[in-house]
Image 1 (cartoon, rainbow, N blue to C red):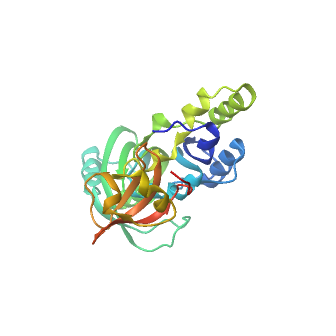
Image 2 (image 1 turned 45 degrees about the vertical axis):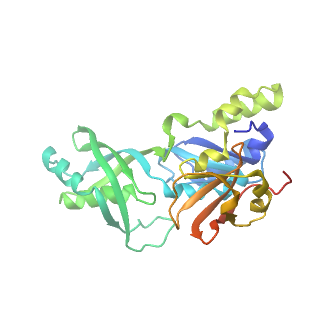
Image 3 (image 1 turned 180 degrees about the vertical axis):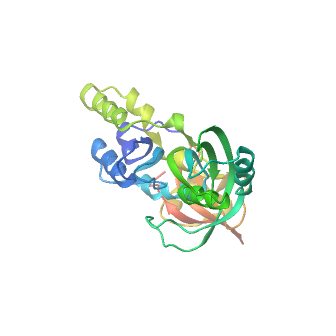
Length: 286
């Protein structure tokens, strides 16, 4: 992987923010933009103002990639409060029934249309119980509303429940331990700008390639890079190495030194391996 300058990372990087309680995700993304004095940021996976935790924010050209994180699961730790006393064995049994495919209607205050939709709950487990509160961990498909999940579990228990507190602990491969506060980011930026100290800001800003590290990879020949950067399809003779890929799925195209060219869609037709979906490399000569 090429070592980019801090300036290049500001134009093509990602920061994992530990979102505080209070502001909207859009506000946090805007604060990242203002702290770093850049023109464009974008976040992946909106968190309600009261929800804390992992919020990936793409910088500059990385905003083209950030929404691909809707493909990865999200993990949460939360507190669900039941409205009446409950039997512990029954609540464990009921919660287990919500693993797998479920149907949800988004809550009234949501950014999407309130239509019935299917989502997957990969796992939901009880971590602790105290009075009418249940501390739980859930791993879910992107777009699953935990608030709605708590309400539905309460209905299934016939006693009602609501989400009392929630923290996102992971967005795919980005974990809670990867997250930094806005104050951390500001301090690191000041150290770099005023003292020339890069260590702290490099610890926080990750290369944009990290966003799509979960995708299968294709390494392409240097002779094919410029055409791909202009939006051309990838042809079989341009491939150096290729992971196992499936037709219709996303794949990340890289140069031989690990620089991301594009995220493409696998076609495997005739001599064409993939067609571009998001080209992120700026065209240049190799």
